[in-house]
Image 1: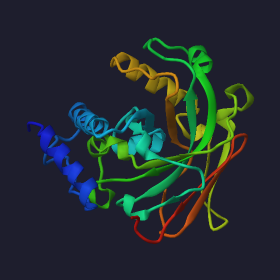
Image 2: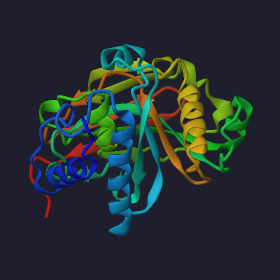
Image 3: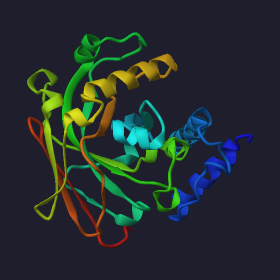
Image 4: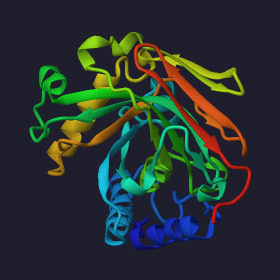
Length: 265
């Protein structure tokens, strides 16, 4: 089966524009397991967004849970690009019609103070490069109908990206044990997801290490100022329109987002 990268890109773009999810790409436009072609689809989308005036501000890492990796039949994470248009202020309301079938998950975000151009990066290099860490909520979304996704579908769909919300109280990486950071994601004061830093590849730094090396090897390294969402600390939760969600991460503070029960302008 020959990959139809242009057609896959068109279907995903149309789904974003119309708000109507498309059928899975695998088996139709992309072969099962053809991750390389899926990343080429992702690149086409990223170029289009930048051509429309969006600015790349970092990257997100997905598939950082070993259990989720096994369910996808893969043995490493995936990634997608973040742009300024995806950023939402802490506590701000999100128009529900900006998204198709949103879910939320709590994460630790790294903000870099130095470039990471060398694929042979060490943990010490990473620690020196991180300016600060923040609590984050990633609002994941899928342009694929009913979240019926494989590794190929999610990679092509920019790692099922949607929006992201960062907390506003930065912490130095030396002041917190990321592996032991406990997380509670609450809706209406009740926990809906719990987890810890260890759920993210054993330590969120491991996820950052993988991404930094992968992008440097591809010639598109992480840069100073980039935001990196390192991966979920617990299960993702479907969004209820009109609801507020607050993530509390020990040592890092909290971050909150609210969804409208109506469309935006």
